[in-house]
Image 1: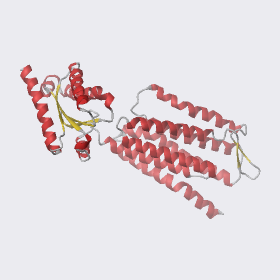
Image 2 (image 1 turned 30 degrees about the horizontal axis):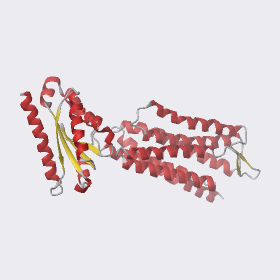
Image 3 (image 1 turned 180 degrees about the horizontal axis):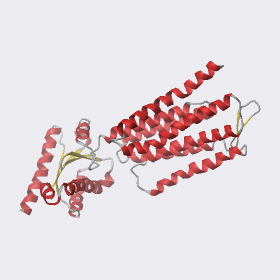
Image 4 (image 1 turned 60 degrees about the horizontal axis):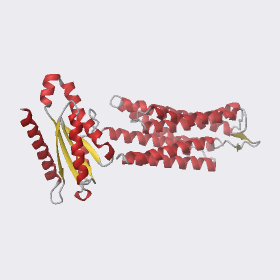
Length: 363
């Protein structure tokens, strides 16, 4: 009997504990580089660790057939801990959204908490039979419904971000939702243990690794994609997709640095990205801006008609005129009979032609 219980405990805990330890090591190693990311993942990590402890205590009470108030309290904590972890993953997914209304998402978790607390005083959520079996009450599936609601929200959000070109993160979220729903279903239908906690641990670990990897694809100062990302993207480009290149370079950066200092120069460089995003915001998913070095940027557009690009270039000039800083932008379409290097050189040449005209006008 003792050997069987030990075997079940190992099966219940081995994968979750391994993943928790794995994530702790990564957080400690990378905290000095990505402290902001550590702060995001501490809540789900703490929640998952608590859930492992709670599930083991619940398992202990279940096996000694203790059906007192303490066992009910532990079961209630387990229900709510799962929901809190799910909610923390949602806030990680919404990390770039500043709208305070996102905090309304906590309401289903609060409702679920008060409903499950009823299990301390009534049999509306669950009770125990004479032989120790769990008897589900009319509100027994409230935690599962809450979890499913959060999954539906995440699914909808994943669809939404695909329109903004964040396909990779959408895939991660889709996988998180699918595996969580399967875990909920398997545990609920078969009264099994350890399935959902293993899935949750895996979801948290892989989501962390995804964001960690994505962080190193982005230029930290401007928020544009970096040089490595540019050349990685180029390998997947095809002229048949209708590719346009816009080469951009800040005007008078040396004068700005010498006159006002490098912090102002950095502000001027960041203004390029802000202006491009402002101009292109309704075309999310169809373009990407890359910082190739210094004040040199390249915008890759895919699948846009020629008149759309021309309209964009006109609005880019208009938005730039409202900015404190000016830049030169040259646009070309990648022709079927040329290599990407040739197209890149043409885009640069088009940009320098505009820059020369600027200097001629201001000399």
